[in-house]
Length: 305
Image (cartoon, rainbow, N blue to C red; front, side, top):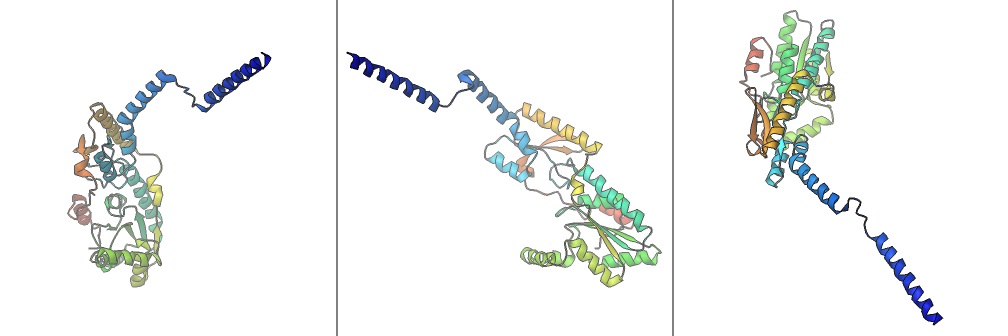
């Protein structure tokens, strides 16, 4: 009888221990079923309504369009200092960078006036020269070199020598980091890439190559200033603050309307929704016939062409 009681007690203990182990092995539901379902519902709303905006502000329009094609609700916000996105007149970030680039040229004027030298200010812009063009005009550069207008180094030298003959003791060049010579512009892409690789062994950037060429022909001292990533930093200007607010409000309204697959652009001063399928992957280049280019030439600025 006693043996049966002992065996029964052991069985009960084993069962209790097993249940305890099972409870420990199971994941704890800290939310509870009701809280978990509420969390999942809230997360789905977040993904559907807010996540697209967060993503679209950080990626390129081409990538945004690919995500749209995969079925993700996307709204793209045109954020770049290059102002090179097709489908919008202005991108937020451009005007702030423009003020920094223009200030760099303004500061060079002070030292240039007291030294008879050639000064090169290298402005950001690999493929599009909008920032360099605007900064060059605003800062009073004498020569502006941008990717869309291939330059002839002999024409650049002529512009410098013309100023020297006119009694001007200095020349300031605003050079886009993607500026390209007429000779290089005629090369096939593969050959040009090979030439860039070779150039990189000798010169940090195109500005240093141009400086070397000018110095060899004219004998003038050449100094180079590269504001670099300073153009991407600092506080946004008032224009960009207002513009980004307007674009953000436009994006929020598009979310409320559940209209996705669009970029929130500025066209003729008004906020517009531009289908990503129309603008994705397209660059807004500076036309050689642009009114600002014409105006710059009218006041004597050389483009080396």
